[in-house]
Structure formats: C-alpha cells, structure tokens
Image (tube, rainbow, N blue to C red; front, top):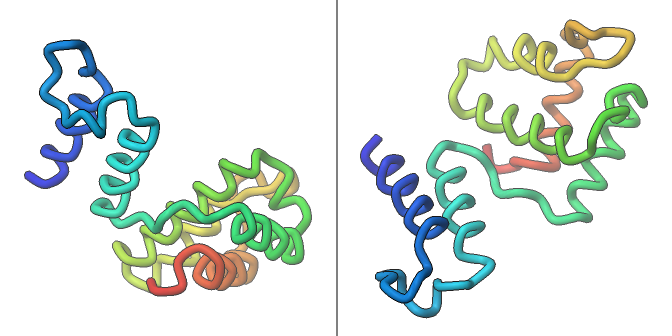
Length: 135
C-alpha cells in the first residue's frame, strides 16, 4: 500500500511540477515519457499487464471478432482496457470466478448485461493469449 501511495505521489509531483524551482531531475522535466512511465509502473504494481503494441491489440480485437463480431462494436481502446482489467482479475480472483466476471465485463448489443459462460471462457482464452500470456 505504501508503494502505491509513493507512486501516486510521484505521479502528482511529476505532473504538477516543472517550474524553475522544481526538484525533478532535469532529464524528467518536460520529458513526455516520464508521466507515462510512472503510470505504467503504477499499473504494473496494481497487477495490470503492460499496454499492448498496435499489432498485438489488433490481433486481440480480431480474435474477439472471431468469437462474436458484436464484441468489437465499441471503442477499441476501451476493449483493450477491458481485457487488461480481465488480466488483473486472473491474478486477483479465484479461477472459478473468471468466467462470471468476464461475462459481466464483456457485453454486446444483444447481451447488454454480459455474455454467457461459454463465450466468456473463450474471451478469457483470447485475453490470456494476447494480453497477458504470463498470468
């Protein structure tokens, strides 16, 4: 918990400082990658996998489309984030809850309350293969 507080504090300092009196290292001042690096570090500490590169994200979306084209009707970035959320749940929740949570997280216009267990199980396979193979 302390590590999370320190990371959040560092993120605030990085995002809020930068004037002439700043104590941030000169290499980090004005560096567009510094806040993103801090965010990625914080996300990793919280159990999220790294954001996928464009090719991996496209393969993930194609695999979801193969399950049900309606799964990819929404915003692609949102769908990738749902997958990353599911990855975190693979680490944090008991396996018996995975399909239920995935079923609720992934919905379609035909299933606005979430997809069924069989579809959710296939989604989990795609998520593990494309977004978090080491989880």
